[in-house]
Image (cartoon, rainbow, N blue to C red; front, top):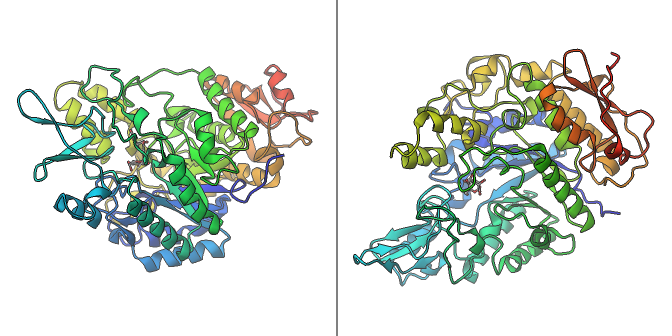
Length: 568
Ligand code: TEU
């Protein structure tokens, strides 16, 4: 009964431009490199390409600090390259998605340069300025206790004016003041410019942070740190939906695609206001409830144990809610901020890596929603190697943590390096592994961030040549979603008229025994599993096979696991 829409049936392939393909030998990926790989992307079977920010930027946060929304970061190429890319995609029947980063700009953006130049500048009010609290020693202190996501206070003192400005991320990423209508108009102009140019929509960076509680209250004190999470006062704030409706009206004119990134809020009743079919706001959002399962209490980097039951209930919750409330899910497990899933939710040991990657592909690809695949995920790329030292990391979040905590003697460097190996954003940012040649075929010179050691065996060329590879498994899943949208894209757990034979030769999926638990949640049909059973084989793994004679997917959830030996 759900309304069909092109964007519901699409799969998005996310490209991290710096790490995808370098065409000119400077060690940094670029647009011409992406253009040279369009056939590869098309062969996988995706419909939309999302580029992480390619705009002019000092690159304090890999382009999430934009200094000109109307120009391209020179190492990535030119506006002409964007045109060629858009044409190349269109020729292949694919669409282009841009990253819209408008909660904040770079401190080098002319808007901020104007704003900081004097309190009377007309653009002063485009950012968020507050007078200090003067402490008992007469020293200025930040107006509240909000913590920046990259460490320390979220407020930076400006000596000249004696005021603080807000930056939820780095101090080089000042937050825009969306209360000011001129700011909103400027954002609308950016959106129109890119849609007029022919892009088909946007992924919107931390879009639920744009409306702040104007009394700027302290965040609740939950640790002994001076700085606390203030998100209760800026995540899904008072005017968010008004702002999103303004944007939604423009998107509608162009029939454009939108996915909002929404950290900190897992309340479906709140989220549905942004993604409800009739709301005129966004098509879908990225929530963080899965990818935060292993985050420590007040700090993402510290480890936390989680169990399969939690994962299962989170997935079921979103699947069920969006189905029943005419919303829509964005399905993702990896992106440029998250570790690789084989290392995180599977095993990256040589004997299990491929099996884990296929298992997780099925787990994600058989849910209802729009599917997002992050570059390298289709190869089952793992986290960075165990031997990486701190000088191999590039990410501001990791390096700030090292500076603040490890350099200050507050944490054991060995322990912290172990934690980065599990959670650092750089795990997802190593170069794409194209082939077994030098630098993995990514670049003819030394890449900006080290290539993973495993590229000689784990690479796209090898997987294209092997019909049992992770790449081909993914492409099988995407093919099934295209062939059976009623079940695999729109399907609910209630009942299905068809039974799919999935496990022909193309997708024997052996799952390591240690992953039987995850498999079983899947086999029981989290909510939308296709007709599969898991059978034990001699190696101690299990194999996905078709579920003979069942006509209703719901039955799976009531069937016990069948662990009979499988005939091959
Ligand atoms: O990320 C927002 C976010 O909340 C986090 O996932 C963030 O990456 C970090 O891990 C917090 O611990 C978005 C972008 O995806 C990210 O790359 C940017 O750094 C950030 O916004 C600021 O623009």
